[in-house]
Image 1 (cartoon, rainbow, N blue to C red):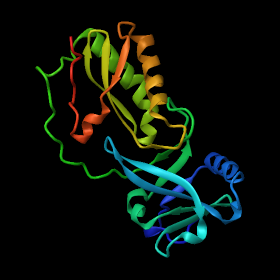
Image 2: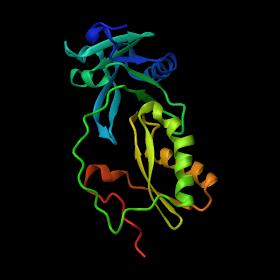
Image 3: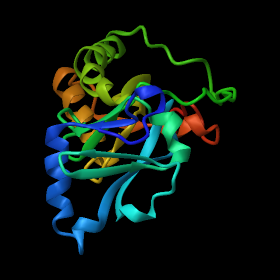
Image 4: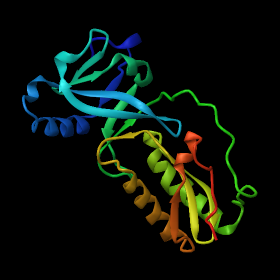
Length: 218
């Protein structure tokens, strides 16, 4: 498949379904024969890589960029992203984040130093019945579904009728909007735990700039 696989292992494989979808999108571009699908790491979230995918001229590839061809589709990974993506697979998403594409990557970014969480009051108690039922939904329904692309949802706290969740993942593609994730998880939790009326996303705490969990103001 490739011209320059490091140590003989493909940097990025693409499933047949994903190839068909990308070629369909490529056909709508001007001069599609000259274009390649470029995939690169553009950051990290929640202990997983984030990606950028776009069409660009194949001739723009530098000599050390990774280049592959699969099903008539040319794929390019810029050299800076190559060591972060060896062994990855691009596929259509078939989980709670329905729509778009996902990348299954066996590599993880180095763990950043964690700032001490900003807590207001004692640590949240997750031993209660409602909290435990929410955790069961996450572990039995949500996380097995989104784990394929490095996704995970963790319960941070339950306060009154609100569940505070921390989300992480390595999804890519325009159909993977955060609102879709929130709606998918929210529906599953509310159906199983009717005591929960609101799902609150506190994912930004990983940047160390927002509180790990801030109880609602009374």
